[in-house]
Image 1 (cartoon, one colour):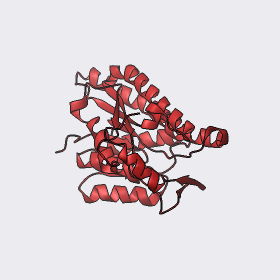
Image 2: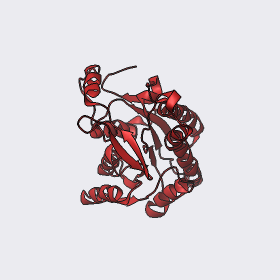
Image 3: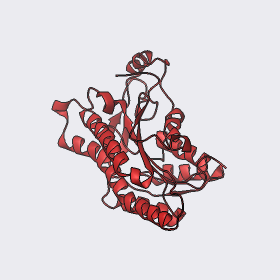
Image 4: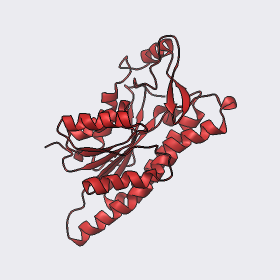
Length: 276
């Protein structure tokens, strides 16, 4: 029996990278997980990995920015597993440019995926959580502590050149986190954020000598950090290296455990000691 036995978790963007590791970690600790990705193959791979290890998972495919996604995501948890206890808003990507070259499309796309989508998911989750709390209180039962963990970034806490859109979205997510910590305390829900520093994922690791790209609904988005720049940045990290997706997932897991039941409205920086 893991520390999250009996819990039901939503993890957006969990087919790859950090999201996958978060889903695997929560499942390993007993949570039943709804896995999400744009593409069927990575989502199914995560679900299969969870079930092969003895866990339970369902998939909910699609973009978190679709108008109907939030309600469908929440409904998958309720219909498939009978409730909702943990929400991890992780899905996202970067589309960088200096401000004078940044288009409205770039700005809107990144604000939509990193800020509007979490808002919609949490808005869709509220009636489910409120109803569960009401029923528990009516029955004279204790109200369990539920968890929300929003994934931010050190770009949101300190800004980052070339990322006006991403930094603004991740800073806005911290405001949403603090507000919902105040609104949802009455439901015994803790709402926190994790701000990642340099974590090695497909969004930061570049092919030799050049940047890579990812496909986001038909758009080729350039990602990656120049290897020389990556090495220089790592020298500024007190631990002397980038973090791994598994270590990033560990920071999220901390805020899902019973030991964090009296921590809310906070931002945990997972950056190896680096500060801006």
